[in-house]
Length: 246
Image (tube, rainbow, N blue to C red; front, side):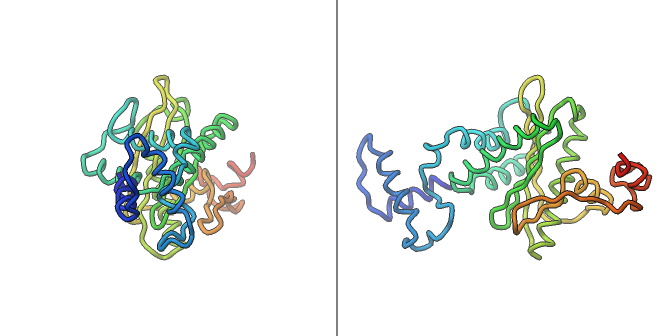
């Protein structure tokens, strides 16, 4: 919806003629104009208007699933309140199509990573002060829906803490978890504002399992505890006598 409204504004500004059956040509022309660096306020790497939807319908389709599964379609995770639905839809919708396509392709890579390694695949992307956290696994590994939702919540909260520490400013985060089930891919959404309520033990465990992101450089490093430190798995043993000794 955000993109449609911006497109209508651009149509009115350009005064491009309306030709029945020629909207595709007008869109392509305006998308080309909007992408030019000499247009005011267009000096961005992802212009709001582009032909990305035509160029990569698969990537766009994967991203649109994130939106449609918020309020409809089964299977899905725990139900959301109307206010939650409205907030999450606004978060996902207010993104240029080209970024939607990029995120869709990124999600496909994460799902392929899970198939190749058999381990839960996660990652995060940010636009402005909005962080999208993604986690993909299967019902075989996470059979309990409440535990799966808790894992997604802790991962999202940890990433929000890390982002806030990196940039010293407030942010919002949306966690999207997808689980492969016998009935298809199940979607779970978690929206968080503010970075409170995270214990050191939970953060250590999340960073040990999913790594520590560098938001400025765009990569994730593995967390290796000190050998004499407590193992992040929560066993109560020293790391060298638990996972560090395997």
